[in-house]
Length: 358
Image: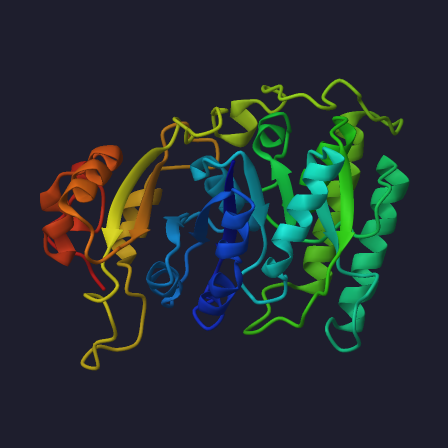
């Protein structure tokens, strides 16, 4: 079995390294899971991507801002049988992944979400956010018959075939609640586990009023789109059906386990963390060139079937020559791409430029 851990990040250079170190790779391997860790850089202007790469993650550059847009890019690149998620701000306990996966296996579940609210410690979340989460969860229960306690949690574990059966259209913060609603109403076996939610590190991205009202509006629109009577389908229960979410709405084509979404053009490059370490002569800023973002996002929309994505794969120093050759063959690169000067290999070959601004 293979597990893809997908983490969206926006200007989280202070936290992302510690978040990645918390993913229990050794314990997951003992459970016979092969693990890939994917960080989706959602347009950061700091060194988030650099820190993620040097800590062993693969970084997908998604220039179109939005929580949902970041996850859609990460899910498209993921190749695991199972997908796990969480934020890049140290709020979610990735160390709980083995426990959640065991629960999924023992109960033959398709989708497991987490409950932050039942054991929430004082001071971890502001009163306004506690009230907002309670209101949104209560509204979800009333409108959709949602049986669980926390509709807004950002940590989920689900079988990859579930994603391809859902019709999740949100590009922003409502993505989280819509994903859960879709999994529930489509009849997948869902469950919820309590976690120890922690205070976020770094700058908060949420706006209580704006995001709260946006989520309420999305719940109402979703209820109308599904019909006015709450209902749950049993058709998808236990199945691996695809096609429930059309490619026009999601902008991605369903892929089988072990394959990446073919509607995106993946420009994979090795990232040499040692070569791009801090340079005291330069001002502090992003070490992944902004030109790579411009090249990836030029002329694309959330429904563009041929969108370009730049992917930075963490450099492994001392790789054997055979491994280098096979790795480049898989990524569609030549060895010269890996050995080329930094400016020449910042973007895909057909978009290569003479230089890239750092």
